Image (cartoon, rainbow, N blue to C red; front, side, top):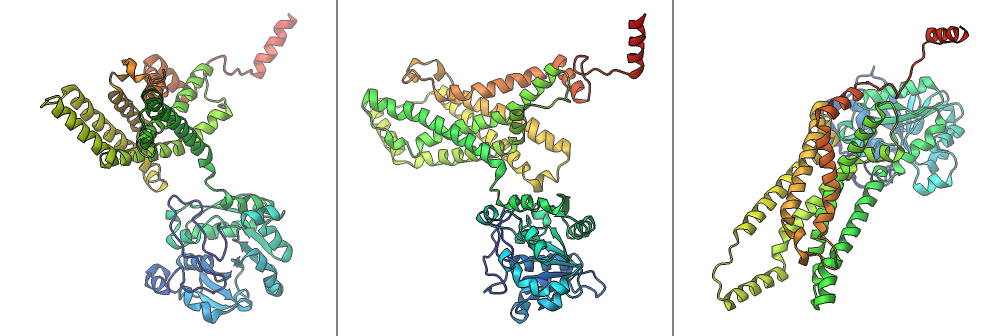
Length: 511
């Protein structure tokens, strides 16, 4: 959980990186940012005396990272600590580390980087803090958030009624401050009851390279403090969907490949459960998830064609589905990657070696010197090649989904990769599946327990998406859809009544 003054996880970042866990208030064995690293950075040189002065109360990881970022942005930083002699070596040399009483004397903006339970220890500074802006950067734990009705910022404001409290920077991790906002989320929610104080902190956030987001009054601080407590909120539904598909296909493959031979033929094939059945299940999940990325777009286009307008909201379920496409696509790539790794491991199994030995013995006993089947050889070569191409295209989609890569692409480039190449990946996956199945769907022996082969089930949704996409390429539909998306509406979709027309209609009715 992200806490001020302690090592916190990367909140709002694409790739989280470890931060050394340390204790608060200078009780650290090893600093998060070494003084040598700071002194070697020319951008963090000594700031001139006329630079804007900012104060920080606290000496934990977040306070040190904050001081480094402020110094790099051109601010004069003064840090208040209960033991400045012990903590001075942990901060950049450009920052002044002194006692708390001296640190709050001159700065007008002071960051409060201590835990909520230590707020009361600052009450002795109430006279020096009068009229100043206090920026609360703390975060409660999930238990504390449920226990207290008021936010940390509101509690701080109640302790210092003569100060202006601003809630900000709580969603930014110490690592983001240390490495720079380019490696994390640039947005910084800000809320306060004083517009001028919000403007001051917003300008400060801009100078540090972040993008401030006005969240309103200080009453919104509780909502802002809840943001770091949410664990991957956009991944809950896609993860449940992927797990549900995995369980369904795993049970289905278990019944067909393990239970049916045991019940009807007396063969014990339970050894397939850890690897073989999983490897049969993973491509099914990846394939269906990939088709579910593009199915909502098909449904949205169909709704727009039927309604004849783009100015009507989609149903909530479709709107949420559209918003989760990125997560569903990344989970599809994850399952496809696991399938590739599992497939490489298949020849290493002892069971596979035993099957090869048994096949060789049967070949000797039947006096067959050549088992080459041209059709099977070509099918397997094409099947593997299409699988590699599909995985490569899918990996390109996954890479361009990262914010650091997506931000470097224009909208047309991003749309081409995610839409056009994504559809190519779906087609390649479909050909990969069809080549795997070949003629097995028409063989009676493949219907174990009267259940069709697994690959026939996975083809249902992707084939619907590919067929619909192909229909939308027809000129009669593509032109109409393009007109609708450019603002055109059919007559029945919306009607405008001009005041003059209404007057004329009344006169006609009187006549």
